Length: 62
Image (cartoon, rainbow, N blue to C red; front, top):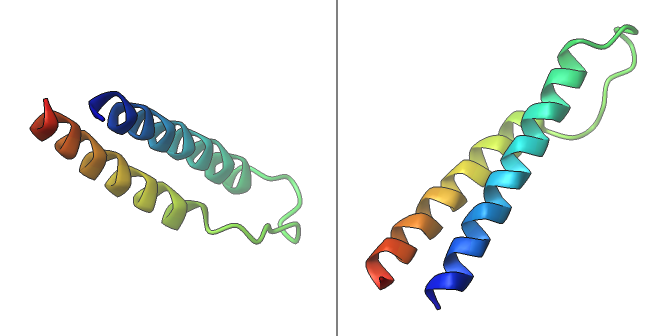
């Protein structure tokens, strides 16, 4: 069970890294009219919250 929680935590951190990369690409775009539809800051915050909760559960389970 603890290994599953840690793998979920790592996955959430990978999603947070992807969201950071996507938000950086959106901020540094060359065409100001070429906006995306993904809410990268929201995805980043949610992924970090999920990672923290899963890490807390994994530490409590161990």
